[in-house]
Length: 408
Ligand code: ADP
Image 1 (cartoon, rainbow, N blue to C red):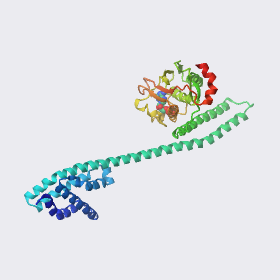
Image 2 (cartoon, rainbow, N blue to C red; image 1 turned 135 degrees about the horizontal axis):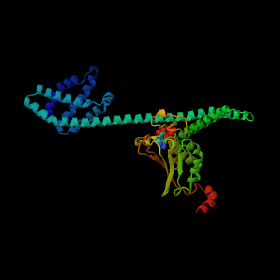
Image 3 (tube, protein in one colour; image 1 turned 60 degrees about the vertical axis):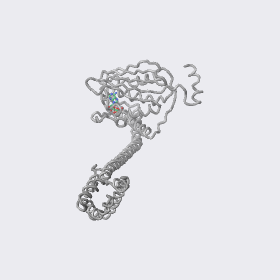
């Protein structure tokens, strides 16, 4: 008798034994029996034809029906299941056949069982990879949703805060007007100034929140005009003079090729970028430190380089600080003082700076040997801006023609 015929004689006993051994719960037996019957049928075909591929459909069914728990647990239940089939097939053969027949049958079955193992391992791995990538996709979706709701929250909060702020500003102005002509004590003046400073700070934070929500929704529009970098540096020098004096710091503005050339960009927004980077340089540099603005002209770009002699930034944080709310987890540093030493703000400044620079088609990054409050390694921010020599539209070109001819 040939091996496949031997197998057929074993089928009823094998099926009963396999169903009892492999289906632990009685209610699963019927379903499993049908599957085992089909497996046995395919195994017989494989032995008869010498082609193990007959087993593929049933193996695929088993691999794809791995349960959630099996996938989560990472245990290989399918391989264990096949191992039990191999053992019980050997048992049934030895009991029902004579020694020679059993030996022949087992030798004939071995290559097909080996095929089952390798195929099942491969399919199981594929099912696991598909499961993990599904999990990753759903985590990514959750994170995106979270980011959306964070961004929605910022937009709503900024809007809601604007109304009471306008009230505070309005009443402060009325109070100032009402006190006009009346002698104010130094204390009254302090109180009025306190309200104004607080309202100004709050407005700056709300404006930052609005900018973040504009950037998150790709709604930041640029008002492209001619601009000169050296003029912006001069504006900021004046603006920051008091803070620099208070912190006994010096700001050196170097003249570099391209800094006095007219280029097109949104001067208000670019000023905001330099302001954010410079106020950070003041904040994260101890009293007496030095800040330098330098730069260079590159083909098609101007690179502005802002160096400080401050506490520096760890290499692993150098990308992170451009994310929104990035305060490097040091909430103890939080302070509402705009230029107080290490007075961490809401963590929006560099995120906005990056958004503005990238909307201009440029790039911003930082280099620093690391964070050290004693050795003060300093940080160097690079701001790469495209050198745009042409006006953005015809109307502006006509308007600027005399100025541009003069510059050429
Ligand atoms: P913040 O409002 O906290 O200043 P930013 O977005 O401006 O937010 O900066 C993010 C973080 O990057 C800061 O909290 C600080 O830890 C770090 N950082 C920014 N600029 C510097 C700098 N010049 N030196 C050292 N650390 C800096």
